[in-house]
Structures are given as C-alpha cells and as structure tokens.
Length: 304
Figure (cartoon, rainbow, N blue to C red):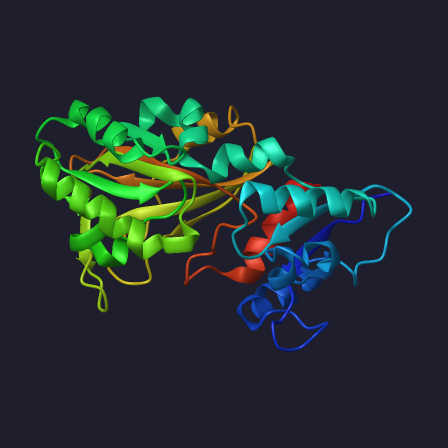
C-alpha cells in the first residue's frame, strides 16, 4: 500500500482552520495531486510562549507518516520545535533538523557547493568583535566588488545601500553597508553576516520597483535527489525559451545532505553557470510564474 503523504501549510492569521491566503493556490494544488493537507499556526509556532499549541488542531496518526512543510521561513530552533512536536503525533518532517540547516544557512551549505559558487566569507554574531572579524576576513576580496546578506536573506531591493559594495577594500563603505543591512534585517537577522564576491551575471532588465539589476537566474527544486522542476527566478525580463543544461547541478544535488531543497543557479556574463545558493525546499518560495499544479504533480512523483 502506498504511503499517505502530507503537506503542512500555514494557517490563516485571521481565520482559524483556513489556509493562509498566500498559500491558497498551493493548498488546492496539493490536494488535487493526492496529498493530504494539515495546518500549523505560524504565529504561535514563532511565539516565545505559544509554540506548544501551534499544532493543536493536528490529530495524531497510527502509522509514522512523512510530512512536507510548505510555509514561511523558520529558524533552526523553530524548525526543531515543529519537528519534535509533529514526531510526537507520528508525523515526520521530510528533512530532519540537521538537513534543514544544511540548506537554510548559506555557511552550512558551502561544503556541498563551495567549488561552484562565488567566494564567500562569513561571521556569526556571537561576540562584540564580530563585525571587526568579518571586515578582517573580507580582505581576501582585495578591491573586488562584493554583496552582503545574512545567513539566509539579503536586502537586495536596497541594492545600493545595504547589498552591493563596489570596492571591498574601502573599509568605511563596507562597514557602513554592513551596518545598514543589520538595521534593515533588525530582529529578523539570521545568525550572522555573509560577504560574497560579486560575479557579473547575464543581464535581463532593471526591477520595475526597486531599481535593482535583474539577471538570468533559475530556481531548481530537488526531492529525494530527483529534479522536481526548474523555474525562471524573476517575473520580469526576457528569458530564453530553452532552459539551460543542468546535468552538472543534478550530479551535485545527489551529494547534498537534504531530502528536499532548492538550488538557485545563474548564468555569468561569460556564459558559464554557477550556483548562487541552496535553500530548504520547505521554505523556498515558488517563483511567480511557476505552474503550481505541475510543481505538486512532480513533487508527488519524486516523493513516491
């Protein structure tokens, strides 16, 4: 008998027992493709004093069953709470706690992609000298341009003020933009700061709202080492109708210690493809032009 598979979505913050409207299309497609659906209260899960009731509407099952979370980003600690709570009800999230962090935090994923991604340094914010240490480590870039992000997200829509640094050797400018990033990320800052070599990518257009440059990038999803799909990352700009050859990245995916993850790739100005980053597949967003029904159809195939 085929195992029943579950997708766990975030509950609406304003209406109990209803899916968050941002995930409504995915909720419908998941059900249409044979997944059972569950709901978790995201606000409770991420609350200091209410996390224990986040899954109160989920009833235990008799047989250990696989569940895939498709919702808003969680810190590893929050994911750990969800993982253990669901396990007590006989549901096992597709990625264990270590596998989640492997792809959610860029520094943790470097061991899988270091040879095919831009040069990267990072520093955890666990002491008062963290920024000074990061500045010191950034000297490896010399006068090259770099981009900034925390362990998970950048502020790329504040491209000039908190993401792109034209010359890494300009210490004052580098420090100012790190400070800007920290202020913008505020309480959502993930662990520490990452500095990465800026690589010239194949240009598409300028973002209509933020003014940031959009380049030829793709998001791939893998489940159980199999490709779920490849999707144009941006909704603006003219992509080639023919998707790139991703044979190399499918081989790399077999070595990533995660059962469900995303992989963002991009074409450099010289035509070569590189990996930008990995992400846990449960919290990685679907690009705007994704055929959602086809995504869940292929996800079901890869899960079986």
